[in-house]
Image 1 (cartoon, one colour):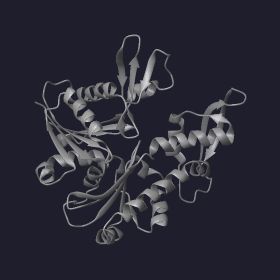
Image 2 (cartoon, one colour):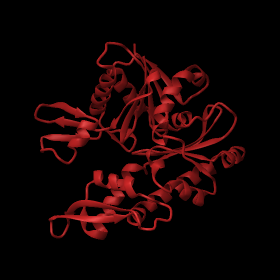
Image 3 (cartoon, helix red, strand yellow):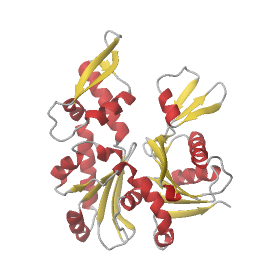
Image 4 (cartoon, helix red, strand yellow):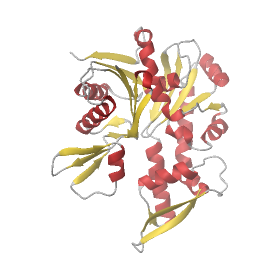
Length: 336
C-alpha cells in the first residue's frame, strides 16, 4: 500500500492509493509533561491550543517548513499513519513532500521519522514539483512552468521543465507569518490582543489583498492591553489587507528574483502558460490579481489549490521510475 504525506508546517495531508486524500489535520501535538507522553495529535490537539494547563505542552514540531522537534514529528507521523491504516501490520511505501530549501540533515530527519513509523521505502519529492503534478501540469515536456506554493511556513517558488527544477527559491513568508502580522496589527492599532488561531480565522473569512472596500466585517474577541479586560472588535477586509500586504508584496519580490535566474526561453513559456498559485495562501482573495499587477504575468489558481501538493505526492507513485531516471529532486532510501 502506497502512502503520500504532505508534511506541512500548518497541516499534514495524507493520501492512500486510489482512495485519494484520507487525512487532513493540523501539524500539532499535545504532550503531557507529567505523564511524559503524547496525548493528542492533529484536530484533537488543535482544539486544545490555548486552553490547557501548564503541564500540557501544545507543540508544533515543524517550524518555517523544517523539523524543529524530531521526536514530536516522529510521534505525529506514526499516529497519523496508524489512524489511516487502522494499525494494520504492513510496511508501506511512503512519498514524503519536503520544501525545496531543505538541507541534507533535515532530509535525513524526515526519512528517519518515516522509517520509525514503519515505512518500507521512503521517497522524497520537493513541494513545487508535487504542486505542479497535483495541478495537472505535464512537467516532462521541454516547456517552462512556474509554481508559487504558499504554505503554512514557507513559500516555495520554482520553474520546472523536463522533470527538473531550473530555478527556485524558498522564503519563510507564508500563512503563519500572515497570522502573526494580523496579531501585531490589531495589537498596535486597536490595543487588543488576539490569538493566532483567531487571526487565521479572520484572514480566511474576510482577507482580501486587492482593492478591499471595507464592506466585509468580522468580529474578533481578545484582551484589551490597557484595561486587561475581555473585549470584542469588528475588523474589516481593509484592516486585514493593511496588516498583511507587505508580506504579500515580499512574496511578489521573491517571484521576480526567480525570473532573474530563469533562461529567457522559459520566461517566454511562463508568460504564455501563466504562474500557478497553490497552497492555502492561494485561497486568499485577490492574491492572483495582486500578483498579476505586480509581475505582469497571468496567474492560475487550480481547483482545490490547497490539496495540489498532496495530490502530487500520490501521482508521484505513477511516475517513480520516470522521475528517478536522471531526476535529482527525488531521492530513494531503503529501510534495511
